[in-house]
Image 1 (cartoon, rainbow, N blue to C red):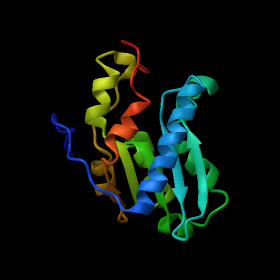
Image 2 (image 1 turned 60 degrees about the vertical axis):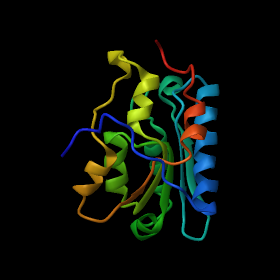
Image 3 (image 1 turned 135 degrees about the horizontal axis):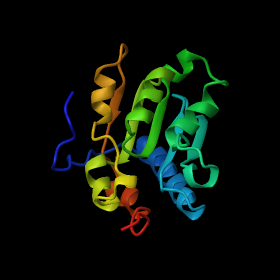
Length: 171
């Protein structure tokens, strides 16, 4: 496994469908921030366009350190969907999934991830505070170790995905 690159990756263009749902996840990130949480959102979508689950980061309002948007969306979708349905679904995340969220995506069998701001750019907003640092490991490294294929697309819509982070982190 490799640590994240020091320079940010290039932005990936999206088609209309992926753009629509990623913007929905970005909107969930705005809602998270409005509620006093860190600004992250996630949406899980079936191939037919049905939204299976959506969630925002709820760490601060719940006190649950695992209440990341991706994990919360997976917790909503898992009891309602078969593993086959999740394997065919796409998880849209406003930010690159952290190691914990990438692990949850693996365990859920979700087969495709599209994300907004990447971890390298996100670290610029987070700064050097220890209480804001993450494990510097790309979600792609976690997905590469999976026993099933997880397609990963991102970063995308970087400016839109970055907007809710401006001024949101402690300095």
